[in-house]
Length: 589
Image (cartoon, rainbow, N blue to C red; front, side, top):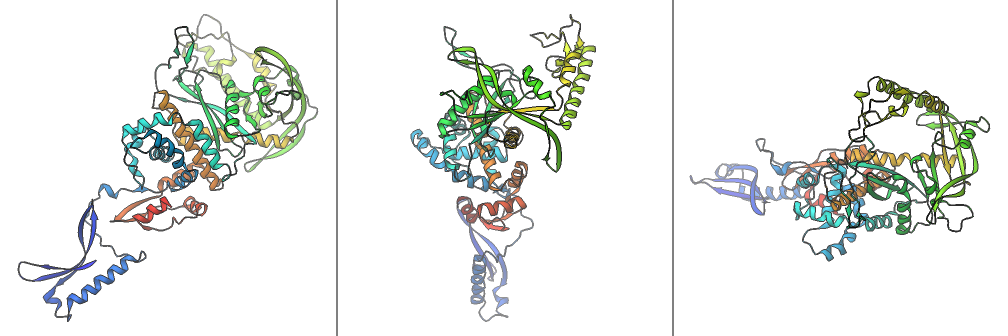
C-alpha cells in the first residue's frame, strides 16, 4: 500500500491510500482509505505527506500479518462468477490418491502416448467427481471448476479420448493399488468376500455378439437382458466384485448380463491370486455361488494333490439341500442355545454343527457328473425372529398369488415375480411375457406346506473344519460389507444408469467407479470406521470456500467429520480465512 496524491483541475491535491493488485494479468489499483484535501490537512499536520506515507507503510505491515486483515467492503459490489464457492473437501481424497502415487502410475503411459493432455488430471477429475458430484462425463467436464484447483488444459474430446486409454488399465491399476495400500492400510486377504450385481442401461436392445463366418463367437456383447436386481427389463452388465477381509475392494470383472454368476468366482480368484501374489484365501459368498464345482475348485478333496489350497465359507439353502441334509437340520438332537448381539439388541437362536463327507458331482478332466467326496463343516441355525420374517414375506406373496389366480390378465412374467412360485400350471408367453389363460391356475398348497417346515432355519458350510463355529459365523457375517459396497456404488456414486455405450468407455466407466469405491473405503478406514459414506461425502461436499478479496478466501463449513480428517491426516482445516497460495500448498502438500 502507498500514499497517492491526486492533483485536481481546480489546483487542489487529494490524498488517499491505495493498493496495487493484479486482475487477469493486468496491474490495477483500489482505494483502501480516503484521507482528504492536502490544504485542509496542513491545518492539523506539519507534514501530511510524510505522516500518511508512514500510515500507509504501517497498514502494509499489518496486512502482511494474516491475523490482522483490514478489508474495505463495497456494499454495492455485484456477485461475479469468480465469487462462486470452491470445493476444498476433496483434499482428503487427494491425500489418499497422491499417497497411492497414481502420478507415477500414469507417467510411463503418458510418455508413451505422447498426448498434450494429462491422463492423471482427467482420471482425478473423474474419480473425485464420481465420489462427490456424480454425473455424466459431459456434466462432470462442464462442472470441473467446482474444485479449488482448476482441472484445465484438456477438452471434452480429450476426456472421451482418455476413456479408451483407461479401458485397458484395469488389471495393472488393481495391482498398483494393492501394492501401494497393502502395508499402509494393513490389508488382509486371508479371507475375501465375493458377490455379483448388475447395472442397467437405458437402451432398447441387447448388444450383438461378434461372430465369424463359421458361427464362432469372437466377442460377446456386453449389454444383455438378464435377471436385473430390481426386475427392470433393460439390458444389463453384471459385475463380480472381490473384497478383502476389511471390506476394501481388491478386484472386479465384468461379464454379459445374461450369463450365470455361478461360474464367475473361479476366474477372478485365479487371476487375483496370481496378480497380487496371494498364497491362500478363504472365499466368503452367499448361497447363490454355492455350487459343487466352486467348492471343489476352492478346496478340493482332502487327499487331492491338485487341490487349489484355498477355502470357502458359503451360505447354504436348507430348502435346497438334499434329503439327508434336511433331515439333519430338522432333527432336534445336537442344538444348543445362544444369544448374539444384533446392534443394541440380543437375539436368541439355537445352532449345531458337524463335519460331513458330502458327495457331489463335478466337471473334471473334461467329464461332467464325476462323483467326488468333499469333507466340509456344516452349521445349522434356527431363529424364531427369522421364522416370523420368512412367514410374513411368504404370506405377502401368497396373497399376491391368489390375486393373480383371480385376475391373470393383470400380471406379466415381470410383475408376478415371487407370487408365481406359488401358482400351479402358470405358463408365460415367451414373446410378450403375458400369462397364458388356456390353463386352470391353482394355489400350490403342497409347496407352501413344504416351505413352512424350514421357516427360521439357515445354514453355513465351509471347508475350514478347524475353525470354531463362532469364527465361521463372524467371517460369514462380514458378507454384509459387500452388499453395502454395491449400495454405495449405485446410490452414492450413482454408477447407474450407465450413459456411455462403447465397450472401451464402459470398461473405463467401471474402472473409475472401482477406484472411487477404493478411495471411499480407504478414507472410511483412515477415519477408523466412525462415519458412514453418506456422512463423509456430505461433509466433504460442504467444505467449501468463497473468494472475499483478491487472493483471500473464507471457509464456510466445519463439522466433526472435518475435525476427524484433520486428526487423521495431520492437517489444519480450522482457519476461517486463507490466502490462495496457502490453500494451494495445502492441496499440494
